[in-house]
Image 1 (spheres, helix red, strand yellow):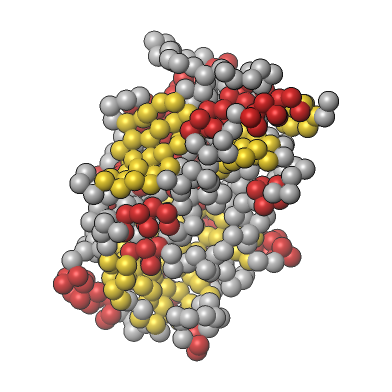
Image 2 (image 1 turned 180 degrees about the vertical axis):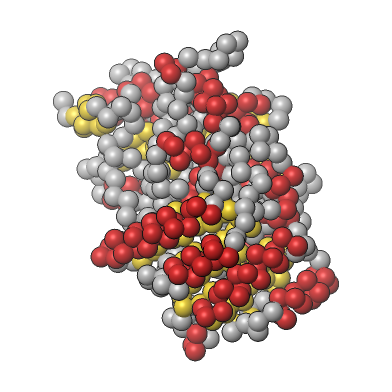
Length: 498
């Protein structure tokens, strides 16, 4: 009987025979992909071309039943399991070596309720899918800045983007989520059901189960006024000092993230700026259009910029503006930090590294996360750094694998020199695999409660391919808080389901 050697969650070999795999295939509506299949190479690849992992089994799930089946197969066979939504994790957390990938990319349904201002989106959606569905109704929710990003990973890590100052983090706009737990049960997490789980998934990542859909609150955002203002790199110190003082006082309808960049040699940028190292701010004003002129007045008066690209546009146009610049399969290495203040000494570090971008695609962004996100307490969701004013990322990016060491070294040196000016932790979606101390520093005092909830819902740490929150030792539960699952699904890979 033919066997495939897989990897267990503890790293030991696991042999999967053809009978087990045939049984799994029969009980999936989606596709089961093995290393021998012609679709395998495409199916295993993720957004970051630095990640080269070879799962033993890929389950491309078509629906919730498939997710339950895949989770059951991983649990019963003790397999290492990774969950993939959009595959954008720079750390490659949507893939695993020798294990099972539970791929949700085919689950991309959306349903907008224009009366209640909500959208139900399956976890395989990208933000482009959600924007397409909601924009038809003149509505939007808080998401990132690249529309090809999957909603699952971004949301579970907290989520911030162009609308954050006005409407909070993405998790502040999640009303409920459907989750397949480690025991195979489908649960709903909301303010009314499984409140501890609802608390944990809002910032706690994919540690607690496989989210199959989210219900998001929507806001009346159809067209925005926005775009970039670019400045010569020689003015970067002046621009960054102005920016750090301007943004905290700006109307919450106005968002702007600061960046170091090399101007892409393509429209809409004028040719005389192509391939120039510059700094800039990408603006998004989501307020009344008749107030936009007054809002942008101090921005126009500062400078003057080398490029003033502000205009009215559909919100999805800004959301997708960077898609072509960052297609799948570039080399990526990034690091991040939360920032409370930007002192002059930190600006000096920024100028040192921001003026020496190693490649055209490499960049540094400072995303403001003040405003509405500060109205939520640091213990009200798993996302701890509610007092932080910026979320910072430095990203080394290039299409050529020969430049991998160059971009990685630039990021590490930049991060190491700037980290002493940080708040201590980081946005989990901007972290590589940086160790348990870094994870705990990011969740601070919330880590203990997260560990308790992990022990309740995933005591064996089945969902560990993430910024891992470890269950309490020996899977023990806090006193009086033992999980009593109902309708637990049992998957026996040797016996067909009936």
